[in-house]
Image: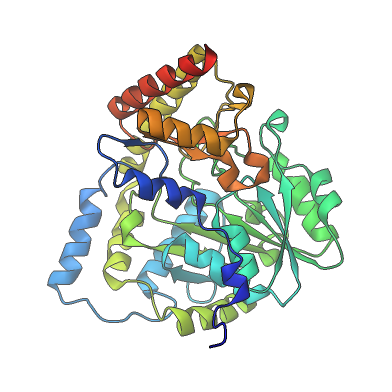
Length: 387
């Protein structure tokens, strides 16, 4: 028989996040600080609206782009929160999580051989989605000495005549770095100068500490060359509802919906009705979760410093990215040995790109009690390494 497998798919590395998650799921007494999932229940009023939609028999397909009512709520939410103006009927698509939005964006804009600059460390799907769409990923490495912020000169060193787009994600997963309006302006200038699209993954936009989120699409003349991806998983603790959205210029959105309708048809109906309630009335619940994350963030920063772990102070998302370079181990070795000896799962920084080597991604989307127990085990492990 011939080989029926796609070389593109076979060549992809499995997710470094899921590897450790799968091990922990079968390990008694293990604590995982590896998964980017809120530990809060979805706010009750959101769940109640989902239940009510089922009771009313609202279980049929929606339009491909999503419920019109939800798209209007998304449009109003983006303008109210981030000064982004998108037409609900022509420039917004409801997707199966933000992850589908990334995939649809890549497949819509890329031709075979087009290059995409990917800013790393980053979410594990970016490189894979570019490759599966026939594109060529070109990575740019963020640096801790720059507070993991992107610099225009880094992009200048990576651009070629084949470059078509840049993927950025701020607040950043895994570092927790954010970029202000002033810091994004040179990136927007670069996109104009080289006639590039910017795909901005803003799934953590509601989770910032000391900074208000600013979208690059809100800068002058950037809306027409930006694709903004967001969703409900992180801000509203709705990971299992699998719902996200994309905002993009009309002509690009017209083609994105085509990809979406052939591959997905429509996002889950129950989730869409619940999401309407989330955007209308859950600002207070989001603020409460953000306050709790901030408390956990400060706790981890304090504890890592006390342990002697070098650690960049994150300003967004719910991750912290401590350095373990001084131990002379790779990230994979450190994480594997920690899991084996102390039953604590932390994701190696190398899972998010080569520049993540020497770091660990620690999620603080867990209770203080769980964090205290996990850090106690981590401290024991570090003390043994230092002997």
